[in-house]
Amino acid sequence: MEDFHKLFYEEGKEIISQLEENLLHLENDISNSEIINSVFRNLHTLKGSGAMFGFDNLSSFTHKIETLYDEIRNKKIQINQEIINFTLKSADLISEYIESNDSEDLNSKANELLKVLDSYSNEESEIEETVNSNDLRSHKTEDIKELYSKKKLYYISFTPNKDIFKDGTKPIYLIDELSDLGECI
Image 1 (spheres, rainbow, N blue to C red):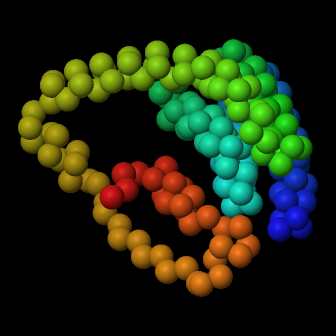
Image 2 (tube, rainbow, N blue to C red; image 1 turned 90 degrees about the vertical axis):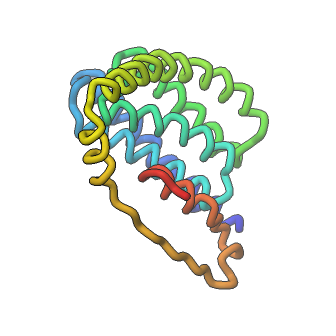
């Protein structure tokens, strides 16, 4: 298992470096959707790799920041310098998680940063929720039915081999990844 942690350490440091580079480029071109997507992918990879190698605290923390960038990609939140600075601080904390093998001691730092994150999401979510409920009231019933008829339903079956836990894989994170794509039942 130590080899897996070493592998994640090396990969994680490289991804953190890419993330910081992308954020510095984003400062100069704040509306560049390619850079925003790249930041999202960096966070997504860190979250997934962290989960796969048993870095649960890192994965959970990174997931929340990844969600912020998903909202930015979907134009629910407007990126600004404050969010970029927050993400740079978060990258430092993720780096500390990697250095310390996901130490519980870092959770208080993570909680402080997540309070800042909540301020970005809550303001926008309340506005978005009001807009969405007003939009639905203004549509005819037929329009709403048409909107929902465009949804797709997928059935996914997963049968892991008996040794799945021996390499540090956590199947619950597969479900988490799927739920990021849409509603899961």
